[in-house]
Length: 283
Image (tube, rainbow, N blue to C red; front, side, top):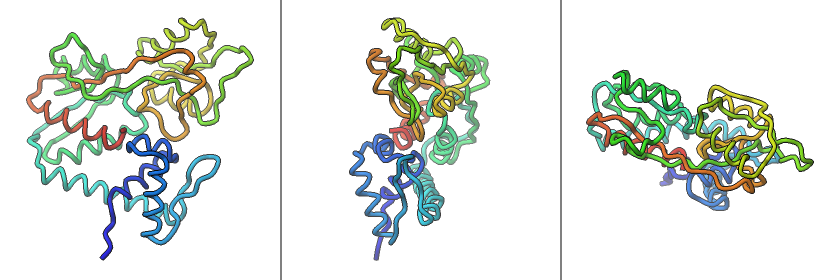
């Protein structure tokens, strides 16, 4: 009797989501070659090619397209079963604020995963920027909020570190002709913006701001289109975005710490759940 290893399915789904073996490997803590071996093993088990590599990245074969939604469902069912068996002590109405800086293109997956891991809780989410979320928490509109860490707050519990990196599209090249660097950035105040401008100032690098966005997703989309470069959290990487190695010369960027704020008695379990979700989806 043959068994289908869910780890093989997770490797396949991650590559299909990112359309890149290297990025998928980084998320899963494996090398590109290790991911390739797992995909080949799954293809041998299922009797056909699932993925095709080309200059633009990775595409799904017809067999891969047929497998993808079913593989996602199996992984979701497995996650839900583990959560139900563990029975985390979280129930009742729970309103959680969620910082949009964290992997904005994967927020629906992250929130759905939180729901599956807390099956007895009546969850609702508010996605936004750090300051409005903390204001809503203080006003009693939220029970807990994932926001930027505040070392001066006794209720700011670190959950995840998100290193900042210079990013560009998969096709972008840094212009070496002396022209100003094209930047896509959030409007102030923004920690990403502050880090980018501080780095440019230290190195006397000329730049021009070609896009000023009101959301991280808008900045991410602009960079992905090739409009310019930006400083974003590593969690923002994915299909069409890559770390700009050419801009590493601008110096080391800070690491952003995200924390769970609030004093709700369910906070410890929620923090544990968020760490698990981030480990599965982002690491």
